[in-house]
Image (cartoon, one colour):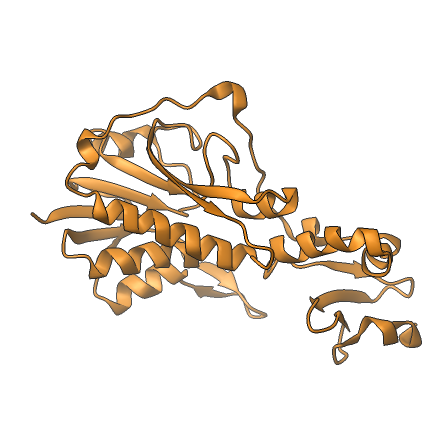
Length: 268
């Protein structure tokens, strides 16, 4: 039995799920709902997000709002879906969230879990409501955060786990027993900005040079890779960006070739 699905998403993580849905015989992708093109680059050219590019390449209709659909699926959409849209699906609209809800609700669960240094994580499928990551839990699948996981590797893995569960349970998802989230243990994450990756120069030096601080810089690097990255400004007002921790710590001054941190004092 094939079910029609309307997909909501806007990021590279969304594409992980969308690609799984496209290859699944149990679902027919009726349409994709995604965010508007955004200005990017030096010339601020309007550019479609990865989901829109994928949809156009595979001839999937891209709409600003759905008219109907038997099931809705949300993954890394980046916007709050209004109740009027939720009502279109008569309760059959679900969200894939990369944490064990109600922990780490909000827009940056992957980054915050890495920053907190936790090792147990997972993915949660919820029935969507109009509040942020608040709806009743349909299912949870546990996973671990590996010592070398970045936001990219962790996110790709968790969204793939979520997509696989959704596809494998397509015939019974409407009859799954729902579990209300425990609000007393809920935690929230914030929307990241470029400034979140900034460290004062002295703090930057301490993180790189003092042994018992290196764990902190490792977590920061993995959480903020590839964006917003870790950066500072030098005493001579030049922007300095951390490029890599392995095989050696590499930094880059604006307009200069990346160099090992141990050689950096020669430049200022």
